[in-house]
Length: 374
Image: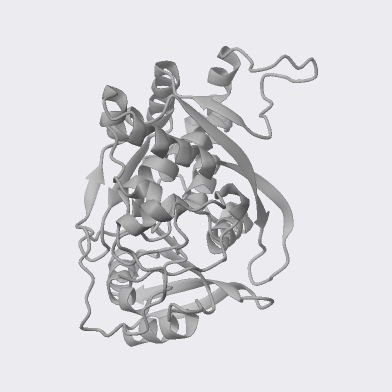
């Protein structure tokens, strides 16, 4: 089994520097890159499984620690950026504490309901960013997910999430979807249209630890939750604060009242959320209006199932046009994937790729728009 280290994650200070080598060794995982990666050496992958929303709500810890992340708004076709918008995400150290608590308190009925894999703590602490077929790096926030969210923000009124079917493939910390949810929850409720958003990540533990908490934070920090926030006692007295202010960072208490208010907002905004773990090859392909993915082309061996899913989800006919966006680094050193191979494969599959945003300095990054014909 091979592991890879990208060194491109944002805010690596959130990750403990003291690595748990004992846990890492217990899984018999090598920390070196396997140079002999022949096509015949196939990796067994978990089948796609839907995780119900009520299960994710049930698995929330009592308290979530969160911090803001700045998203530069990226004008289409330009590497320039305008001032940031602010999203909120769960702190990685907080997810780690949850993992430790659930390992140490196995007889707690609340903790026993968790869907977290036993080895999830290993991946938070291990000196690797992915283990193919086991852990695909979703606990960290990667640069290109921020690029994709910034590009969506730069589309402005051209992009309306209301009334759409949307999927984020390999969602991880779900930064792009968090932006779209912020857009939805900031709109007048009377403008609500039936909207469905699907989040997919290989690891169920990622969906529980970061994807869903960040979805919840997108609601909690939005105007849709203003009345709920105002009903809660302030954490600290601040004479200059008002009921609409949000802290730079803070704690979110997952009380029954909060969960009920969140579900009520989903109904008010006619929003349905679905979460899926497992492989792309076993995902039930369906048509979507908006298809998003970032940092998912890093491994050549995974391109075939990814392309099949992208094509099935976003193939357009004369009456329907889909938005399919892929954000990626030009080259993933030591892993083998990159933009050039991806573009060639898309063309082989009958697709068309247009670069809609790019930055060439350092490790180049792009946001690409894909068009597929039926």
